[in-house]
Amino acid sequence: MTNEELIRELSAGNTSKHSESVTTQAEFEEFECEVRRLWSLVGMSGWQLVVTHRELDENTYANCTSDGIARRIEISLNKKPKECFDVRYLARHEMGHAMLQPLGQYAACRFLTEDELVSAEHEVVMRIISVLNWAMEKE
Ligand SMILES: [Zn+2]
Image (cartoon, rainbow, N blue to C red):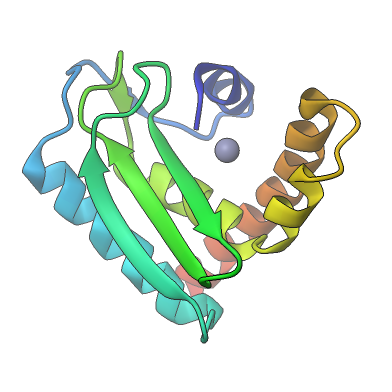
């Protein structure tokens, strides 16, 4: 999730921001726990999941990278973002990206402009988050 995405999602009322600029081990554990809980819910069998706490670009809060050949997905929480917010929401957002793989990776090989691709992928991510939010309320 980048600053541009944050602005979009803050305007949609989906985030709760707090002020520390470093994510703690406890926040990472909460993030990882939520990612793994969602992972078991969405049934991505045949894919390996790795969850990491590492330094990313300061404008990125968390991200999801994938290798469609190795069938491996890495979801990371930034150790030193410019600012932090709700790690559970970040976990759901990055799981939305994970659920689009390998589609997102394949599409990236053929996109017209990067903005169009990112925007199209986010439309689907927002739909997935709606479903995840519904499913979580059922628990
Ligand atoms: Zn995103």
